[in-house]
Length: 172
Image 1 (cartoon, rainbow, N blue to C red):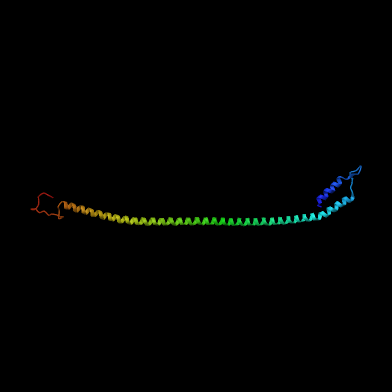
Image 2 (cartoon, rainbow, N blue to C red):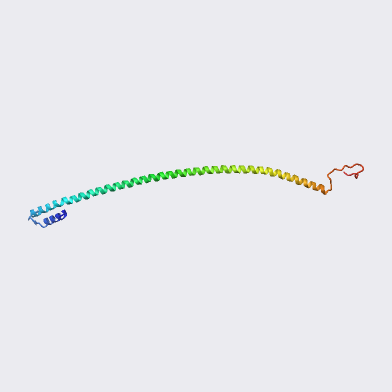
């Protein structure tokens, strides 16, 4: 019999007991009460053992939960540290990438400036050559035009010398 049942029977025994006149006391049969107390004592060790097992299991469950929560917290801190380190790596990588891009842009700008200067120099030389060539062409054309004018006049290109007898008088 369990303790709860024994206590319920003991309560009923006292409630149903005959009251002593003129007092708050009652009369109970001693052997009945002693039997119930003996039943309670027999029930208590097994129920106390069960309670002790539950307490031991509870302590084990709480200890296991603490271990698991500590492991989860440690894993969270490790993950946090990894993410922070990864973020630092990403930030440093971005910083290095920006530096490389800036350096590459500066090199590209310098190369573009060098190319522009080279092309400008070549164009200036070409301009000088073209100018000389144009002047030569112009002189050649001028000479051709002068030769054509001489041919059109039927001039031989010789300068006539006129004497007193040879030419018309008063000319030239």
